Length: 388
Image 1 (cartoon, helix red, strand yellow):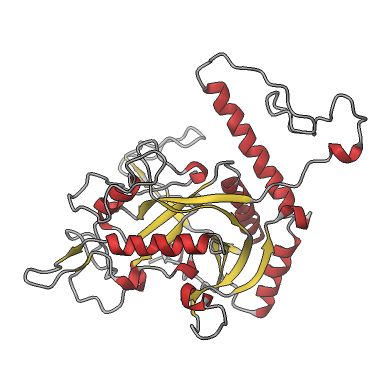
Image 2 (image 1 turned 30 degrees about the horizontal axis):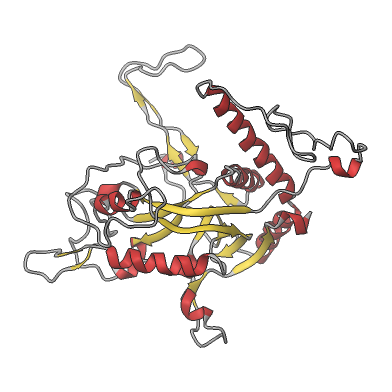
């Protein structure tokens, strides 16, 4: 086999760039939600006559202290390389990135307004000192008509913090044979996704992030016409191209990579994933349950405390919510809320591999609640007012 066709050995992954999701506001909500989720998992018999077991093993459920949004993974095997990444991270102007993300979000909102059906609107005068969003002017702050144009008042305010909720449930790689279940962030300002995307791109361009790649589909029998006008000879296939995967912001609540000691033959669905011993499960009923969890639009009253097994018709060939700044699908009803209205406080470079916490190692009992945690080697505050 030619050297170029050999699969390159991937460097060892040592660190990752992430947004931690656990703080004093989100912790009690996430604890309650994860307990609700665990109690709702249906039980089944893996073999005829065998005792019923949870569809998702307990060992696949992630401890609350590990919840985060991953922006990318890194291979930093030496102290020198790690220090270079830290220096680069600390050199970034996060406030400017947040402002750029805000401009992107505002531009998208204006585009949606232009494409929306026209309706009579009541024109309201902007409040003094506020942005003229109605007229699309984001370049300055509008002073009071009776005030002098003070240069200080024309400076943009520091970006507000990212306040999000975690909602609904999704599966990877597909719902009928899932290995990962995750919840997605919902940001009412639509700034979080472009912020993370810009930050990720800077780390990719600097060479510190390992870009997760996916193959573009190959084309056969001359179906593909290259841009230079030449055609591929009949019967030949054009090699698949590698493309960096779009960013998918997600918080993993279950991952079967952590399942150990699975008896041979359990987990795989109808012969899929042959040669792969990783545990898979049919998550369609669970996803259906959590995507329309409440009977009311206020999302106060659950439909049922337990997932009903009916082999739902949800099927994702490859669920990819890359543009998940607005992750709530139109097909969802009243999705489950894991935690609401909490701030994302920091962005961190963490070591791979969560560490178990000593439940007796602190005086306030937080360790016993978190259970495990990723160790941060460096972090930056996302309180832009204090850092600007």
